[in-house]
Amino acid sequence: MLYNVTISQTHGGVEQYYYPGNKRISAIVPRVYFQNKKNWYGEVRYNYDDLETISFNAGKTFSNDDIISYTVTPIAGIMAGKSTGALLGLNGELDYKKLFFTAESQYAFSAKSRTGNFFYNWSELGYQVTGNIYTGLALQVTRLYKTTSSIEPGFMTGASFNNWTFPMYIFNPMNNSRYFVLGINIEWNKINN
Image (cartoon, rainbow, N blue to C red; front, side, top):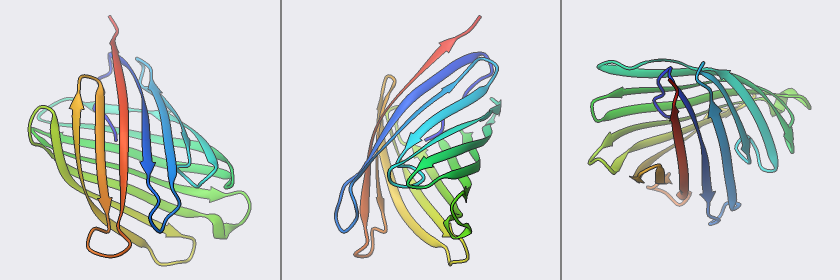
C-alpha cells in the first residue's frame, strides 16, 4: 500500500504480507521502505518479485496535497536470488475525500533469459468507511514475456489503529483458484522543521 507524503516529512515503514497455502505455495512477503525530507525513496522487498528473491529499489517521490491529492514515485532497482535482473516501476496514489486509488506497476528484465521478463501491477480502489476502516476492490495483473495476461480481481478491507494497518485481500473470490493475502503494516512520519 502506498501513502500520501508531503515534502516536509521523513517517512518510512515496514509491511508484512502473508499468502497462506491452499493449492498455492505459502509465502511471507516483507517490505521495508524509507523516504527522506527531500523525497528520495528507497525500499527492500523479499518474495515480492519471485520466491526466494530480494530486490532493492530507489526513486524520487513527487506529490501535491490539494482537493485531489497525488503521489507519484518512479523507481528503478535490481533483484537477486531465484530471479536476477533489473526493475523499472511506478508507484502512485490519488486521494479525493474518502476515495483513494493506488497502483504499483513494474517491468522486470531478467538477467538469465528474456523469457524471465514480466510486467506486474497491483491496483486498489477503496473507500474510507470510517476513520479506521476501509474497503474496496483490488486487482493484480501479471504478464510474462510473450504470454497472455493473468488477471486476478479481488476485494480488500482493512483496519488502521494509530500507525498500524491490518489489510486483508481475497483474490479470484468467485472460483476455485481463490486465495487470501493478510498483512500487518506499520508506518512512521517525522515532521522536519
